[in-house]
Structure formats: structure tokens, C-alpha cells
Length: 533
Image 1 (tube, one colour):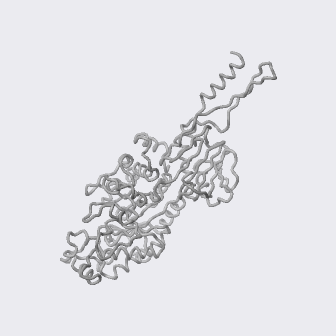
Image 2 (cartoon, rainbow, N blue to C red):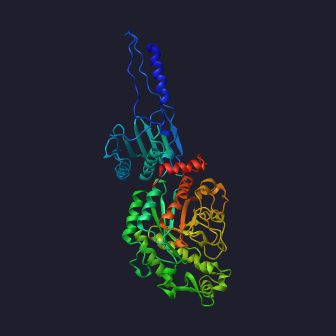
Image 3 (cartoon, rainbow, N blue to C red):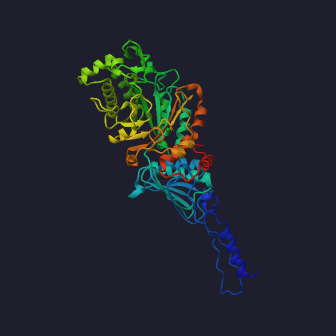
């Protein structure tokens, strides 16, 4: 073979072995070159061959990125001299940089100009989709990665994409990712009242959620069985096994550092059995004088004072934006004829609201009152859907977010009624998103496959979607762990059981498109990225 033929063969060979970063075939940054070979004619040197690459493919992550502009190049992977740098003027990203550097085992450069082989994090302004809350742009070019966003959360999610891309494909693919969540509220709720979960277990869930770009952790810590967070105002209601306030503050601090809001819930006027054990005079009684389990007597002013003292105490402990005030399954309103079954409540309703007053009006006033208390503390109130009633003399506060979970209860309203009223709704569909320990009352453990293949945020009740015109009122979705039969599973079993459902939820609330991967491929990807590990 002549000299010219040898050069052509070398170029062809290099072109054939180039790999895009998206499939793990990335090489070290920079172009490969070969030395020119002399032909004995100095005036006609042969050109140096340059390595070529196929167009990159999108990084494989959970949730999937929503837009990737491919490019030709080796992508990025950490090398011996790599580091994470915070762009000058973006010092608020120091925590995000520190975490990513630790996770990747590379240098944390602090607020300093990026070097060759670095990842740079930067806060930027600008219009369009790039300015959407929690959005980010990730650019991989010239042996560097730059992650930008309008807020700290968006840049943080970009670092999660870097972490998962390295795990799934060995490199961050060349090109540009533009990504943002479809829904603003994405999360997990854990019933820590019926079953005690350790602070370490909850912290592990926070880390797992963060890698999945979930941003809310709900803690249902008061119910009939126990009240599980220490109290200064009413220590008499607290269970022996509980979280200390120091543990709660530690969980909150970790969550805040990972851009997760912790949402407390004190459910009332039902599900107050543990509190009422210490205040038996406030228990609701029916026409026969029998105690209504878990229900507080909402006709008594002392009842509101007690619950409001607790709400104010925990509004101070939890600094986040939201507070859940419950409002579901009040025993008086689960009776077929509330006025006949609870005549004392009926009489009080007529006294306050006139001849048309009903027990539901008392319950609505209760909901509005508790919502006002948490709103005065700077919180956005949330309540379960079966605490909102049609008709009546009194209307529920329009500003309370509806957490829609069920159509099972007596008089349960279809989700479209709330949407027609203009209410904002969070999807907690008990058909897909309720993990109820022991599977009582015809519940079955939901699977990730079901969520991934058939659920969307529009499917608020059962398996039917509401009309798409209401999509803007559906704020997101939350997977809920309920511990009705607390000993049916251990903490570790719960963590394992919710693992794939949580990943499927993360995909569906982030990316509104039909998933590109089959369930089998999605499951395999979940093993590769090992979110939270």
C-alpha cells in the first residue's frame, strides 16, 4: 500500500471507531490526530487525519430530558484534572457545586473561572422556556459542561442529569439539553403517624427523591393511632416513638439543600384520635351518645383553639410554603343522614346559618378557619377533596388547594366539579398513587408499570382522564404511603416497594410526552442510574 493509501486507511479507521457520548462510547476530550507521513515531496504534505463522531443521542435519565440538540463530539467525562466551578456572580450555587464535586470525585473550585475539562454552574436570566422555574440548559462542548438556569433548583436538576448520564452511558453526550418540569408539584407523602419511620429512613427518601427531580415530601404525622413529632405546646399528645424537633430540622435542612419542600399535615376534624385521647371531652358523639372514632366536636370553641395551637406550633417548625390541614373522612359526614345521626351538630348549624344550615356547613367553616390560621403563618393551605362539599350555605375557601385522592366516600364529588369551580388540584389518585400497607379495603399495591403505562396527571379518579382543557389547574402529583396495617411491611420493604412507582411518577410529572422507552427498558435504566445511591 502506498503512503497516500495508508493515510486514507487511517482516517477511515478512526472514523469507524468514534463513539457518541450518549451510548457510552465517548473518548477523552479533544480531537485525535495522526503524524503526516513523508512522501519525499516536501511541497505536497499529506493532511493530518481528524477523528469524527456520529451525532450524539440524548442522555439516558429518569425522568427523561425533554429536549436534546445533538452534536458531534466525544462528550464529557471527569478526568484527573476536572473540577466543578461556579461562574462569577453565581455564588448561590456553591452547595450544588460542592455536592456534585463530591459525587463525581473531582475538585470543587468554588466561585472561579472554569478550566479545561470542568463543569461550570451558572445562574442566568433570559426569556422563553429557559426562564421557566426549575428549568435548566446543559451544554457539552469542547471538553466542558456548562449548566445554567434561572434559579438554583433548575441548575441542581441539571447536575442530576450529569450524574445520571455518567451512570447510564459513561459520559455526558455532546450537544445541548433544554429541560424543565411539566408540573410544579412532584412528590412523595409518608404516613408517619400510623407507623414510626426513623429520621435516617426519611433522609434516604429525600436523597432518592432529589435524584428523580421530585420536590415535595409530605409528612402526615397526626392520626388516630399516634402523633409522631415532639410538641412544646401539647407534649401530652405525642407518642412514645416519635421524631424529635432536632431530627425534623435535620430532615428539613437536607431537603432544602436538595430543593425539596417538606409539607406537614395535621388532619382535622377527623383523624384526631391520638390528640383526643388526651382531650376526651372534645370527642364527637352521635345521637345515641356513642363516640365517633377520631372525630373532634366542631361545635365546641375549645376544639378549634386546641387544633389551632398545634397548627401554629408546627407552622413555625416547618419553614416551607405549604401546610396540609386534612379535612377528610369526618365521621359525621360519612353518615347517610348527618343531621339525624348528629343532632347536636345539626342544631348548631341551624343556629349559626339559619334553617338551611347543615352539618356540612359547620365542617366547611372548620376548614376555612384552619386554612386561615396557616395562611396567617405564611402558608398555602391544602386539604383532601372529600372536605369540599357541593351546595350548602357556606362555600369552601377558593384558595385552598384540593388534593384529590378518592371517589369512594359518601357524596364524593367527581374531579371535574372542582376544576369547573376554578380550583387548583393535586393528583393523589388512590387507584394508582396509594401504597396502603397490608392492602385493606380493596387496596392493592400499585406498580410502576401501571403508572408508567396508563396514568397521567389528568387521571385524577379511577382510570379516566379529565378534559385536557383543565390541565393548567392540575398542579402535579404525589405518591402516598399509608400505613393502615403498620406491621404489614418493614421500613426496608416499604422503600423497596415504592422504588419503581416513584420513578414512574417522576417520569410522568416531568415529561408530558408518551414515554419513549418500553417498561422493560425503563426498568433496566433505573438499575443503571441507581437514583439516590
